[in-house]
Image (cartoon, rainbow, N blue to C red; front, side, top):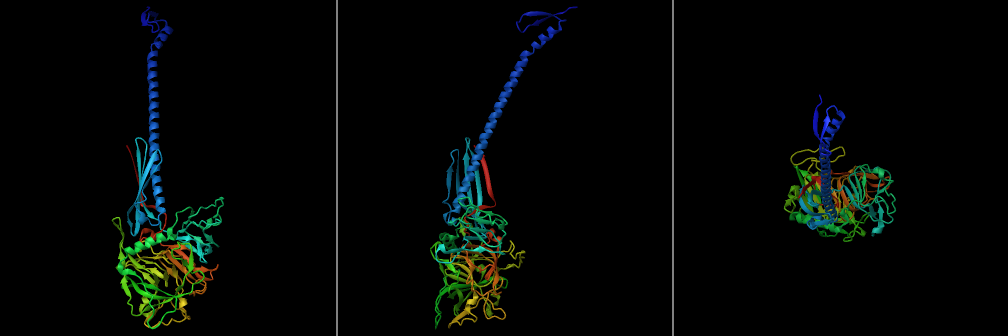
Length: 587
């Protein structure tokens, strides 16, 4: 039985009859009936793909624009931070200029503005806040960098690794780090701008530098010659070049620190010593005045004995005994008269007080520092005592408490100076393998001189005690050893202090002629830090024929802000622990 079907021919819309037995025709008609839906579906899919691709491209572009804006805002904010840090590095005294270093930078597609403010104290150490805001894009993105920064603590910083041998800066001679010396403190040497351009550090033999070394100059000459290739192996913790200047050679910077220190010191502990002609006689010239300080512990309390008016008999300078001519800043030098011995007027009362009696705080911007001891002397200072039977507990200075001494003249060290291993509460602090006080030891000493800080030669007093004039008492220093009538300092001599030398260098007087306890050389230990305009000499010869073999170790406690009196002069600032914060936002 044949069956006929009526179909609509989509090609011409005419009725067509097909025999059901014609399979090929039926399949063709059926497939043709699905073409339009497939085309429509294909168009929809294609349009979806086009729209999807367009939207993907749009979002990718939008993300790229946002990322660009975010990146520009971030870089702008960090550029503002770097500009602020650079400005800080150029200041003689940041606390005197704080608030004047705010600024802005326009990069075209991005801008930044930055501010510098005082943030507070880390113990006795100032903390500054640098805030930089970077803005970029439309809608705008904002990135804020807020960083608490502190000034770098130098281990051993020097304006020049040179020693003067004459009166002009042209007479400077290199000072060498010698074979066998151990320098276990960070080292910084300012750029010398010398011609011909040579390395600004001088080495003979194989000294040991255990911590980082910073140089103010570049490693290479203008002709791309490597000035440091022969010494790089000595720096076990690496060496950094092109570092910011330490401002010890800036007399204005040093003076500002001294002035602020004086203004915050209690009036009772500000001294101006006077050298008085002895009754019934006179001391041979030259002479000068000084305050003598002796640190000791009595009944568990840290004490300081102060003789406010001493007369120092001076001696002709040795070969290396130079300081900076006042006001030269520092372009010229002079040989100065060195310490020989000193007297005090018998009737002048001494002052013996607990270190805590000298404690003060400093307040800046409403923030108050931790308390610490301060003594200010408009003149010279002698630190040390001797065999005086009445003061045997003062032989070897022992500091229990926190103390900084500032002198507008010289500070003469006439004994070993230790920080105590105990505190007033009875706590004991075990030293480490290098003999250094541990991090939790609260006792510390700082010394700042606008002259020099030098270890005296007690042998210059002669083989017998000088006869004091009427009404004066000879103040003995040093010790006598069996079989000798001369006076010596201990071997080893130990100085545990942070020392800042604004008028020359740290060293020993009369090197080349001084009497050494052990013969040709003794050992000098410095546990603390040194900042000096120019090198001082502590020994001569290689191997050493006179003076001290030195072993210098950084007291890492100084980085915590333990030392009273804001004495740091580094031009380098870095974020305090956990001091970096940044945030971002968009319109």
